Image 1 (cartoon, rainbow, N blue to C red):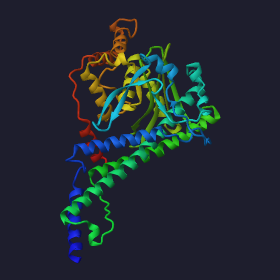
Image 2 (image 1 turned 45 degrees about the vertical axis):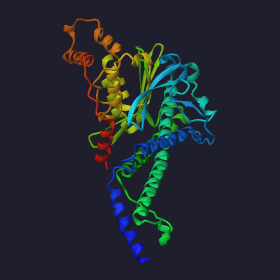
Image 3 (image 1 turned 60 degrees about the vertical axis):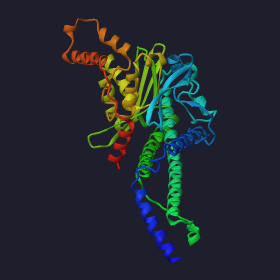
Image 4 (image 1 turned 120 degrees about the horizontal axis):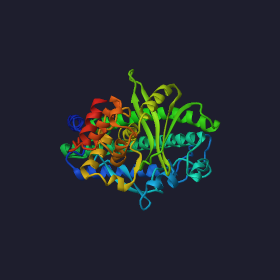
Length: 416
């Protein structure tokens, strides 16, 4: 028995060291990896669809199945074709974005509010956001979706990590018993447990840490937003709204961030909401970051081309929670579509940076040709330069695509 125990300790130490060096326990089994990823997706879907407690302050009622972040009867229906829009959708197994066709009744939904508090968004009925309180409410529900979504991710990661450790432990035990040539229980070991960190579990732990930090950031935003909602006036958050008289065939409700020179993060809540008479662009942040919000708005509202750059930057450098008119997306060749979707993940730029490619070619061409009704000689040098840059965007090709799996690996190894 003593010799068996000694042999077990020697073998288990050897196996543990072997697994510690692995990138993943599925290195040699594609089928197992596929099953594990699909199980994670199923876990996430079940968590996302499960009823929750209403996000309205001091309400304990259960949520309805679908609360929209973006108006389905206005913004989404205006960009829909056959009641469907396209949405970037992350695929865990392939580690890349795809465009997903989704009905407007399912687009931008989350389990956010109970039946009663779903009715507070009265601009759903008038199909227009044109009052200060409407803006407060739209920003509030965008924040609520972010909080719910991050909570869902945290719960999913916790379950996925638990499953990963269980599978790894079972594999290690099987390897030990194979080398030992007998069950460990036969030598008096009733339970084998091990807690080690391989590369995959290390990345999961980093993701959990990052999501928990992000959740705490948005709990503060949520508290400020609820104060403004309950008081029905601007107080705790700063808001900006730009109503542009051009229709953008895209709708977005999400979050973007950038770092100040001191390294501290600034968070913007952003919305792009198209209406029949134009497009409303909303942004909000904490009161202490009001200076950056005003600076941002003043910069990008100088010219229609700069507003277009802002919208495209929000889509690629900001949030992936956007929906686009299908025919607008399909105007691009497949290679360009893949490049844009690739850049949603691999970009390290923020919303102060213009996107390198043109997403809305027709609008860009229109703004270039007819920016003002004056001769080209009268333009300032900076405006001439802007127009030259925008013209070049329409020509850029071919498109370099960096593998998202490589970017993900580099990102987590750099931020460990």
